[in-house]
Length: 211
Ligand code: B16
Ligand code: MG
Image (cartoon, rainbow, N blue to C red):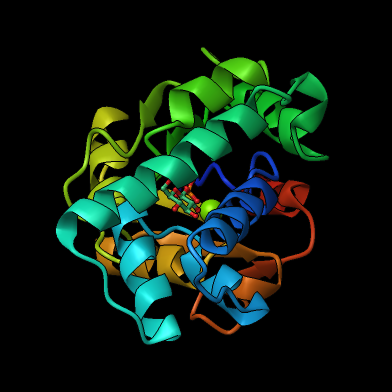
């Protein structure tokens, strides 16, 4: 029986995925590095340093460790500037309704994000304090598709991963959920065909699991 829901953040609760893409693209432009449109989906759910490696591999370029750190920091500064513009209206449609319905059914909820900026984002969009647990990128050592983020989120809810549903927009996140033993619901085009038990159009679609 499913007793908890573990929500990915970027691309599931709010559309910060497009801000990540903009920040990576602009940073690549400043560094004279190519950034193709088909790179963006691959960065979903992937930790910051792993994103740098992916961008370099696809560009066929190399940077020293010092340069990689500077490149990632520059992207993060730009990204955080973009986050300043986030407001409560940036919560994606259906999210608040879904959380309220889960609360009413006694289903526990957590955020499980690879982002070190997750607490700041939750504050800005007005969802701080709405979940029993929040796992962010500072609390894990291995990026999705490793299951660490979902294992920890389930643990903080006092549940086993197999008692949880994961909602993800990234193929790497669906794989991470499957490896943790959780059930996965994929939302959006980039997570389709990644092996999730459910492929949903709207986040409210998950509520049919508790009817
Ligand atoms: P940061 P999620 C992930 O968040 C993003 O999808 C991914 O694009 C990003 O690189 C990663 O967080 C790290 O983010 O640079 O803010 O620490 O989808 O797991 O909520
Ligand atoms: Mg995501």
